[in-house]
Image 1 (spheres, rainbow, N blue to C red):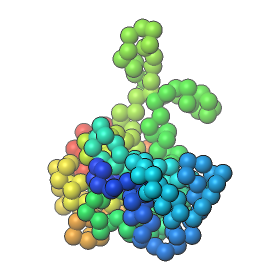
Image 2 (image 1 turned 180 degrees about the vertical axis):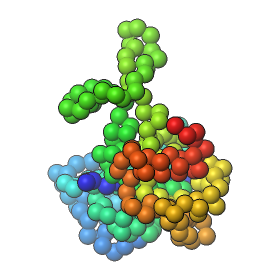
Image 3 (image 1 turned 60 degrees about the vertical axis):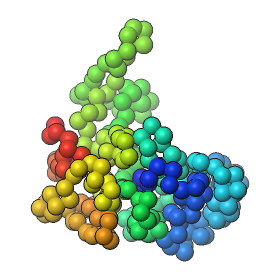
Length: 246
């Protein structure tokens, strides 16, 4: 099982990609020992050296990697937010908390979620050829046209009702995870009411500080689009983003 941490920040609120990664790893001393390559695994260096290199180049985006995973940072102009993705370098929820310690008290933090990468991938896969290449059947999956005229028209998997789907919005990402960390700014943008979250016995709601709360499904990660997990993801989506019940 491979985990990933998705972090959303205020748009261009860091001077460069290096400054954002420095804030990310500032929460725990163990990250100073992490070795990564900049855009390549062939030349590994301590992450602080990689950060210094990125800062000298004033890079607006970056991709740090090693054999276990990668860290990406970029500014999303069309949606007016910046994001960091930490993929494959996190073993569990406790490690995700360590990665976030340097950002949860930062006013530039908007939201974060922990998720299982394979579940997330297939919940958002629309191309039938992806299923064919992986030897997975599309029988029973909803299909829709892509809306383009002939000869560009083709059929796609309709993911619009998938509990684990995500979409980019202006200032934030509509996505569900467990746990999730959500700022006051997030709730202002989505017009969601955090008080609506405390009524569910399957959901832990914790105040991290005055501007960030943590949501956690008591059974851990979301890894299924069936049964109770589907209901729980759809419930969170309805409260946080105003989505209609499928």
